[in-house]
Image (cartoon, rainbow, N blue to C red):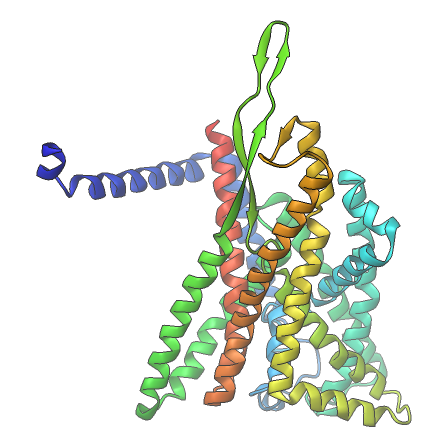
Length: 442
């Protein structure tokens, strides 16, 4: 007691020194280990190629008209996130990974409607998942053609792309479809030879590359009268950043006990552990899915309006009026984020399968019988956790839209979605990197 009172600052200093020592040790492993270093260098090289491709524009672009058309357009701003910044100058990768994400959404929906697809995704192991991913790849091609045709038709009607013959129009479609397929392939290469999810990293790189432009726009539009607004926005951004990190890392530990087993006169088991259930099981996927669903009708209408179908203009005006109504758009966005959070969690977390795996390994949750009782308990628990996580995710997603309606600053509407994606991708990358370091240590 007397020694503790004599040196009260020793414990904080010792703790901080220990944390710094661990950090430097892990950093040394990252730098010295050839396998980890090569994975990081592969990611950097792939992103360098990706950013180089985003600077190559398609033929026939009028950049002056493009800047006017792109200004304060929320639809194009959200689509630019999926293109990784390639849409802002109509590059050959202007579609980005959007078609692949849309194809993945369709395949995920099929797991709910088709028992065959569900068993392929959840029960057939790596071979089933590989086949499932292959179907998503095959869907990407027609979706890329559809989105490319619709978007180029819209740009041509607005005068952004002018002076192109039919051959030139078709050539542009081939270029941007090939660019989307190339990005999909690069994303899978990053997943396989790098660290983390390749598609998410590509989206992350596009967001980060566009941040200087957003900051400069806010800086040039600044007036002294807006100083309280900017201070308030900065404070809310830091608060949202902290909340996203805390909620992403939050988990509910479920205690597990392993039954004792006797083999050859020796007793094994009897140890206790826990099953970590994350508060936000789906991560940033609900945000990406919700954005894709909101963008897809607009792309589809752009395609159909080019065929001059009677009565379609009325439908197009109703849909576009709904999407341009910010309160209704925010409500739809919030609802879709919550629905997709529940949907993706239901697809990726199966309480019955977890209960069976625990029973096979001789483990049980104290106070619950193995089997049906354990499955029902896990299902109820994951539903309550997902409700909290989904509500928070939806709230953070629409908060910038609310701020935009209140302040009139268009850049805020895109900033919240970008913040969620960036934070989740960074945390996932750090978690996977830490796993690689731990694997090398042992």
